[in-house]
Image (tube, rainbow over all chains, first blue to last red; front, top):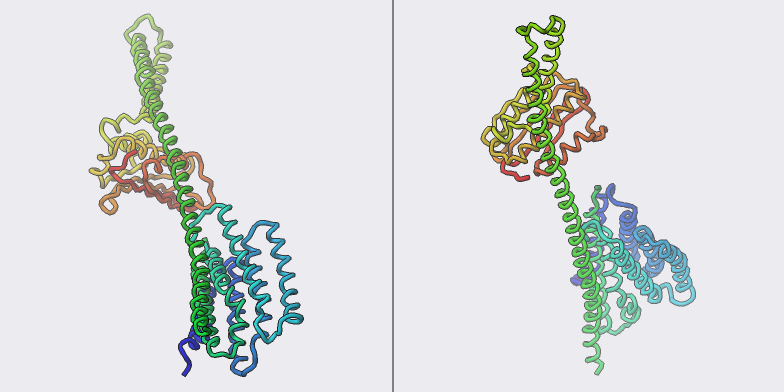
Amino acid sequence: MPSFSQIYMSIVVPISILIPIAIGSYRYKDLGEAMRTIFYYLLLDGLVNILAIYLFSLRVNNLPVLHVFTIIEFLFISGFYLQVIHDGKIKKVIIALMVIFPLLCIANFIFFQDINRFNTNTRPLEALMVMIYSLVYFAQNNEDGIDKKWVANPINWVSTGLLLYFSGALFIFSFSNMTSLQKVSKYHSLDVLIWDIHATLLLIMYLLFAIGFSKCRKK
Amino acid sequence: MQEEVGDNIYFLVIMCTGGTALLVISFVVLFIRNQNKLLKHRQKLHEAALSHQKELLRTVIKSQEEERKRIGQDLHDEVGGSLSNLRMLMNRFDGKNKDVSEEQKEAVQVYRQLIDKIVQDVRNISHNLSPPGLALFGFSEALEELKDVVSKGDDSFISITNHAEAASEKLAYPVALALVRVLQELITNTLKHSGAKRIGISLFMENEDLLAIHYTDDGIGYDGKLSKKGMGMQNIESRLDLINSTYTVQTAINKGFGMFIYVHPLAQF
């Protein structure tokens, strides 16, 4: 009998990705370029979830998927912010990061961290960068002046979702090896708690994305 | 000892994640509040600018009306009076005066007709400038006057039906004047551009509290999407805006022109 936590983490939250995907495909015609990037990111996320669950069921370590996923995820999110941030200099920085970060990731799993373990060097770094993107976006939003209500702008919802998820999960990414590789039962329950929190943050992000998609309407 | 540390770790993890989430959420909430405040401020400024513009327009129209009234009255009293005097003087040269030759009599006859025409024109122009019936007898009378001036004896050209007599008489003077001006402008447009054979104006109550005016002509119409608004149409819009009335236009090429105007009978200028 699987525990509540297992059902929550491995069924409820992965399936909840269908909510934003469903709303996104319903409003697909109304999505701008940026929101389409997020839509494709969600599709990729869903596929990676399925692949991870499949590998897990075969008792194969699925952590290498995470190493590759980190790179692609960062590229998608950078692509998103590349479209919503207008400042030319910041755009150049984002493009530079889109080249440097994947190289760092590859260097990390070749030279520094075992590909079969969590990428605790690069994933927290990714989280930090996404947080900065999000804050830069909000700062720009504040400078530009606003012509419509905050809640009516889908980009705000997506950016909030990303900021909340990556800042909340920063600790989790950083300590994932320390907690999951301990064989002591006490650490195991801590591990479960941490990943429950992670799943909840992910669920909130999906729901915020879903609200964002629902706000996409042609003028 | 280790047991105690283990208990604390759960607490720490929840506190750290909760704390971060709290920070992010409060950041976003504060941000939203700040933006809404800015937005409200901007809307207020925008509204103030709009109402200032409306106020300016109102003053312009008011002074324009006053000026028209003055010119109309002067024209009617001064020019009209002088012309009447001239007409009286002309009577000296009528048939009974033996000093006047036949030739001169004929000429006088022509002058007299000319003076009569000028008197009539001055009268029409001054009435057009300030409809006298409106202040004295109300909106329906002003409409009748308008009809008389435009139809020039051909009664079938304009038909006016008023099913909202009570409400149309209640209209405040500036509102009624604005509506008369709009109808004048519409009629001018019809005469100038449409080649219409008939104009219909009907008044009725909509939902018991809105006075509706339906103006139609059977002219050539125009493509509502393509046509640029001329001065006349802009005048109509600004006048209707000022009395807070709503309106819809229905027209298409060769389908005539129709306009519904809705105004609250107790609206103020």
